[in-house]
Length: 439
Image (cartoon, rainbow, N blue to C red):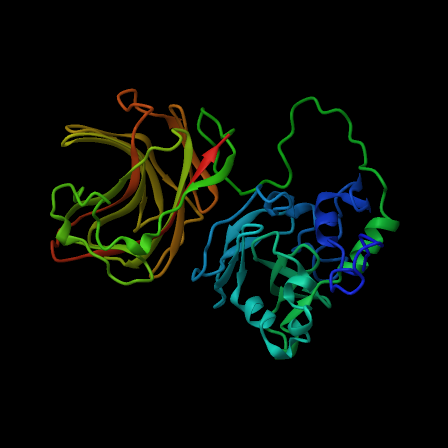
């Protein structure tokens, strides 16, 4: 507990507070006063489970690439309604796993992170011990989430358990489905961790020998395939500059009312269900929706692609167009596609009369298969250079086609299917289209 301002109002609930212990442990910035701190090494203590013999649990330091403590870095987007599938290993490596029935329930814009339903339900349960009528609610006790929730394989009492863990400003929460009901949601031992870090650990970061080459950050943000010759030194994302209300899209029609569709009429694509506001039931042919753009020319575009039904008899793709240039009926585009049948990513240029691949089809292990699977596709583009990511994993990068202007004026989504049975369909949904500025 701490008193930040001894001269403050003693009658307010905020006169005495829980310290921002998690923030200090992850950042290494030990508070020495209301407006002062001392830089130390981030805590090597494990965030959950047994303190020793627990190789599957990451430390506070290993969470650094995934936390938001400045309000801007590593923010997520609103993922409410999606399943929680991200898994962290003991070194902080990111992959995907089973969701175990856990979904995102609440997005907290203050820090840019999502709270899963198992924690959100507990936070609002009258039996949780909080006293919101007196101001002692979940926010007072925990603070805002500073990370997304991650599944880990934590050793607890000598037994390995699948545990969901999420870091908050003041506490760490865990969820263990195999525990008795009353012990499924628990606090981590952050007081013990903080005491060891502040009073027993080295006061300054341990110096390392001067390296003979520039080392890679550890842990890496995602286990990525070997990048192409352009490299993975991509621009960093900044603030959100555009996030449309996709529930307003009643069909694949642009805001000015003109149906931008190749080869088939717009009436062949329609809203299938409100949960996935932009969806299509696609026979043979190609369909796409795009939106004009007058914002920055260097940006990142992210969209979630939901597989609603697949048919293995054909060739089915859904993807993201990240630069579109049009002049009358002439449309040229650059886009990324995710193949629904085998989990590959490709980059292509499409002109009025020609099309070709920038990069060959690349298999991505992090692709989520099956009905209801959600895959996040992102492209960061700066000048004529583009970087491609699937579910947070870097896939490839390349130079844009010289015929496409850097002032290209749109982006959007695309679906197509080609197969032997024209009556077969593939259904995809799109949601959470987010555009961010890049540095």
